[in-house]
Image (cartoon, rainbow, N blue to C red; front, side):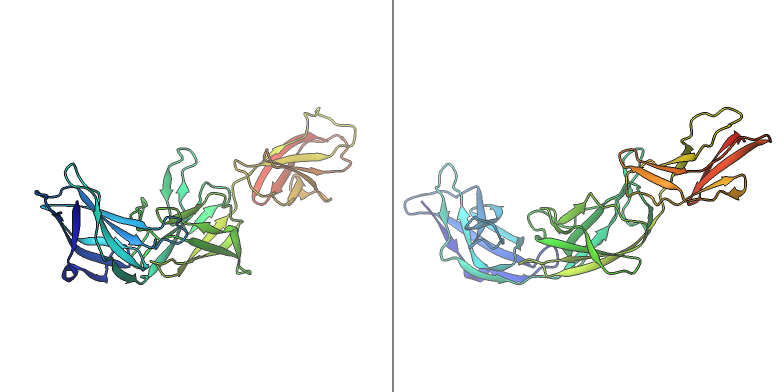
Amino acid sequence: MLHAEQRAQDVGIERGSVGFSSLFYRRAGFAPGSGATGTPTGQVALVGTPNPTPGNPSGSLGIEALSLSNGITTSNSVILPGGTYNLSAHYQGDGTFGPSDSSPAIPVSITAESSKTLISIPVFDPTTGKETGNTPTSIAYGSPYLARFDVGNSSASLTFPPQPLCTTPNCPTGTVTVIDSLGGGAPAPLDAGTFALNSSGFAEDFAVQLLGGSHALSASYSGDNSFNVSSNTYSLTVTPGPTRIISSNPPLPPQVATPFGLGVILTMNFFGVMPSCNFTLFDGATALQGTPNCAWQANGPFLYGSLPGSRRSRSGAPRTYRSRVGTAATGMRLQW
């Protein structure tokens, strides 16, 4: 059998400068048991008991595996998770020596370090699908983008192309709660409202579709045993998405002798909310009187607009009917 020699004078805990709340320095020596000769080889695992990871059903946490050299392993870069637990060394054994554990375990208490929450808006080329940036100040409604929320330590910063802010399993855990204020109005939850961080310490909102106007996003991280709470904001303006208008009237003869209405179709290259029925139809430069009616076909997407009326044929030059919604306009020529 192999027994682990624990050397208390070689154990220390100090605040780390990267990644997590603390760095751990440990020198563990392993010697053959009674009657055995040779030097143990393989790895020794640092184990925390009870498991400091919230919600983990396992009774202990394997923190890091260290390789033995001449029966000794030394490291000054082991990152310990936050919490209060006992730290021990477990030797897995090799072809000559069986497994063993250090005793007694070392009690440790690791406090949480500061965290930083970052909001980014990855945007994509609609043709290639490639990400083209992640910190826009304005985007067009209906353009391809998503919202991303990263949590790292106090020195974390956004980059493009994006780089990981942490290394699994030493990443923040928990949730990020996101609210949005449109045009200075009362904040409201953004989509699901609360997003769980993945194993790489970030969450993404793929369903986001912000309405037109000025938005103030705010993300708040819940914190865990290793990272304190933090929050951040992001300002973004959503401009109107491009649209086009086409005629919905059937082909008409050069002269029309019966009353007829005018119809148009507003369409766009993206899916979103129903546009307003803000059509104006013109006879040349003269706006036609009446209130247009609209019907929305979301799976088109099409907005059908019509202006009922009694337009009768008469002699004269061809006339151009124009329709306008927002700044988009189209025309159709009729003799009447």
